[in-house]
Length: 294
Ligand code: GUN
Image (cartoon, rainbow, N blue to C red):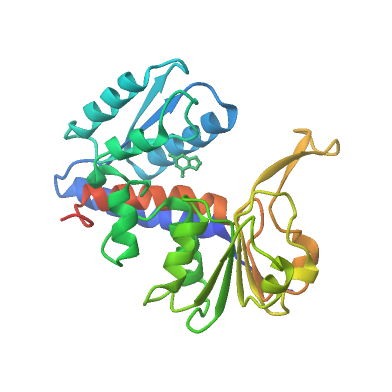
């Protein structure tokens, strides 16, 4: 059996570490870290994610503010709300949950967020800083994966790391982090996407395979080298009458058959997902302690 990389437990450990630090800050008379989340509209998945973020803040002793705006809010009003939060000295971190309604420019909104409060790591300033290997807020999903690789002591130097998917939120930053001079890093990275040819063959040469394609059970055993480390970023609800909820969650990787070949693998649920929230909390703590921008 492979090592099952337990993101749920690791995220709990990180949250406990953060809670200890928050208690220390408070005991020293410092300000409670404070995360603000802006949610536009009533998209079901976004409500679930933001709800989980707010709940996680409570768990570690952070203050949180949830700003809910109607889906027909104007771009200008949203930009003004971001600016208000930028200027609120009590708030350390600000996230605007994506996706946004079509009439609002994600780029404009993202660029409005002060990089010092951009705990999602989405602003050009933070993406640039990460790319230059400067202190930066790294986006929650890639940061969560980096932390899993570290805590499971997965060797990365000189390994062939194949990333499937080039999104700004996951694949692209992941490829940069795995190639950088450090640990985890120093891998030889192949970033694959929808125009890639011979994808199964490329995957078969991966020592570390990071899958963020957004297609249920896309990666099958024949695409995986024996002994590979497989990180599954996907999460999909599929109907399952045998479950009380009527559905179950699956990833981008066909878990059962790939697990038989892999040396280590993240499950879905309980792998990368819980780590993203832990990473967001960690970034917010870093902001409260002025550790990234000084
Ligand atoms: N939508 C999907 N993932 C994310 C994320 O990490 N942050 C924000 N703000 N929105 C998202």
